[in-house]
Amino acid sequence: MSRLLEARDLCAYYGPTQVLFGLGLAVDEGGITTLLGANGAGKTTTLRSLSGMCRTNGDIRFDGKAIAGRATEDIVRLGIAHVPQGRGTFSRQTVEENLEIGAMTRHGRAAIAADVERVYGYFPRLKERRGQQAGTLSGGEQQMLAVGRAMMLRPRLMLLDEPSFGLAPLIVEELFGILRTLNKNEKVSMLLVEQNAALALDLADHAYLIETGRLVTEGPARQLRDDENIRRSYLGY
Amino acid sequence: MELFLHQVLAGLATGGIYACMALAVVMIYQAIDHLNFAQGEMAMFSTFIAWQLIQWGIPYWLAFALTIAISFAAGVVIERVVLKPIHDAPILSHVVAFIALLAILNSSAGFLWDWTIKNFASPFGSGQFLGQNLLSRHDAGMIGVTLLMLVALYLFFRHTRIGLAMRAAAANPESARLAGIRVGWMNALGWGMAAAIGAVAGMLIAPVVFLEPNMMLSILLYGFAGAVVGGLTSPGGAVFGGFSVGVIENLAGTYIPVVGREMKLSIALCIIVAVLCVKPSGLFGRPVVTRV
Image (cartoon, rainbow over all chains, first blue to last red; front, side, top):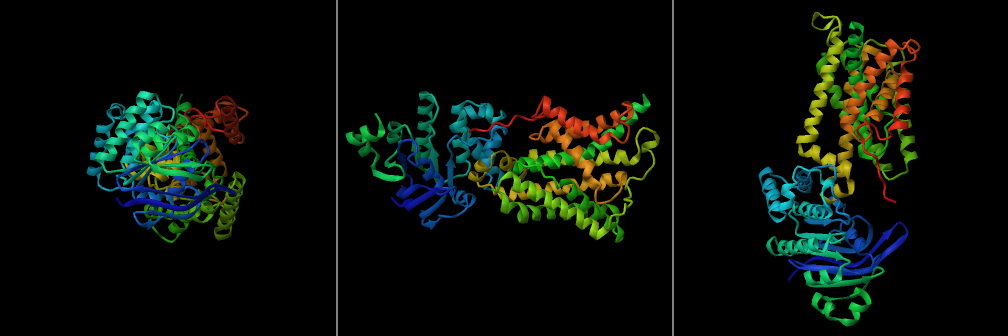
């Protein structure tokens, strides 16, 4: 498998504070990679760095092209859809408008309309609520809308920032099932940031574990899951 | 009764202008979270451009269209040159930039076209509208043009993709960027449109208040009042607020003896204070909640 995304020696800063210290990670074409770590380890910052939303140092390549230092809008246009923490819903706009916003970089009315239907195929509940203001949806529905909005970009890579956050276990199960299907059917590669390590290691095929902005270990998801020491010390289950 | 109706209709006519200014203020407020104090001077300057074009012998409606185009371009340029560099600066920097803009536009209009009061002809003529004596032709024209523009703007924001992109950029810039929307350019576009709306307002009100560099000072104040009444977060509310302020101003001027003509402007300030005391988010606005 070829590498779709690769970051080397990635450092990130908020003002004068350094948050990431020479991180290296990669996502394979068609794969699901997960990034694990405790609160404040720098998971969200890593995703934000990849999307050009932080001041960074180091080399980031997407499909062989260097993207470090580029504007967020331009990185997105290469086919990287970032589902941010807190879902980034446009709460005063309707569900359908949210999906149309997701397709703003694309052309062709018919293709976009077809993709709206495709998203409704994966998330039938969004179709029932298509005319409703997105802010009135439940948390689970908003998370589905955020994933749907990302799909509208027809991305090659999805960056998912804690999609399970604040959702009921049943909803999480449904959502992760859909993520698995998306990965398989739509050939979308994924980089998943999660607090819920058990869940993430189930879905992913490769995992990175970070602590205070530095890499602790990496390997196939199965291997991390079966490592008693790592599980106790870092994953907390 | 006829006096009452007459005052209401005349109030709606000037209220349309306040609505335009309120809308321009709200559009920029939505995009950058600051009030543009220079909005009135931008409109005044546009009106002088229209006057100059007409002086050069260009027919009124062509000058009207040209002025809108020039104002739009100037609005975009102002955003790119003046505001983009200070985008992340604190609020005081913005206030200073707006005041500088106000002073520069005001003085250069005085320098270029001098401070004497000029006549600005109405394209609608000066007689009564359709032979009745409630509404003058210019008042009717003002209401008509304002409504047309508001409908066009509504359709633009509701039914075009770029309108949706602008709404998205204003509502949630970070998320909009993640959808690939060029938020900076959407802001510039918003400035261009606000400048164009202001230009229309200026050209329509100039025959009433006469053209001079300070003509928009009170108009902008009424516009602010309208925006505050409707809520700074609601474009529709701003339009409603603008019309209401126009009508309230006229009725108060007619029926409350102490107010008369001279005290009219204080009504705008009273409305602002009253609304801020009773319902700070305005009639249609939503309270702004910030996570800390």
